[in-house]
Length: 309
Image (tube, rainbow, N blue to C red; front, top):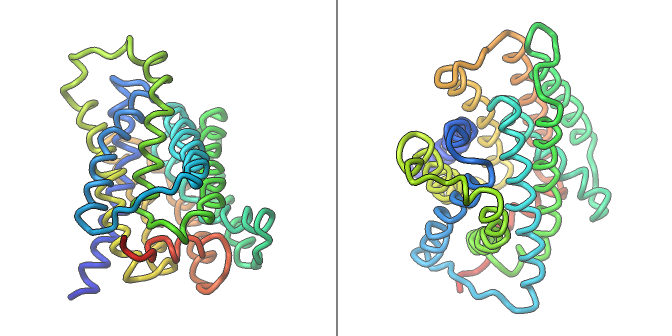
């Protein structure tokens, strides 16, 4: 019964995260990308700190580590959300989710060059296979290029922002638990986004926007996408371990594709379905055939194992 609830938590986290790509489309009907991200962060911060407090995992940040938290926040949420938010205004939810799903493949590559960690053959094969899948999804419209090149590049900016974030996080994961790291980086990120929000979006905000689908979509992004999802996944991660838990993350683009098909009426040609399957195959190959690898995902294995303070 315990495993049932743990696995259910992992599946729910993947489902909720998959829906965030669709929710963004609704939020973007009334709000600009920067406003969406800023409000999302403001909504999520109380959930993260609240969970840390209730679960007994609240920790103080040492002064000498603040510079690392600032760098983390620069990569994610600042650069990551700028890339993802603006990218999603130019590509479909499914294409966006597929590109973001390649993050686990790039982390070991970066770890090899920057941290001198071992790069396995399965990493290389998985990356190659998944790239083929991404290309198939992008070429899903009768074999023609169906994505905005600028939007695709912005989505990859988000991917590489997470890679940079993951490498930097290695300096902190042995001293702080994941909830606190995420809560503080979100708080610093909100401060970094504030000037952009005031300069670019503030004048466009209309009180009439504070109701309806767009507003509730942002609430979903903050409460579920950056709050509840994180809590659910941490539960699964602690019990299942990084290798098994991250397999469920591969469900995200599948959920996004299905929800986009029914809610946003995105097309679902055979090539897109095949492309999604190929991407997932590459991800699974990379994660399952070498469960004990020492690459970038080692960071996540200890992510929530810091003693309570």
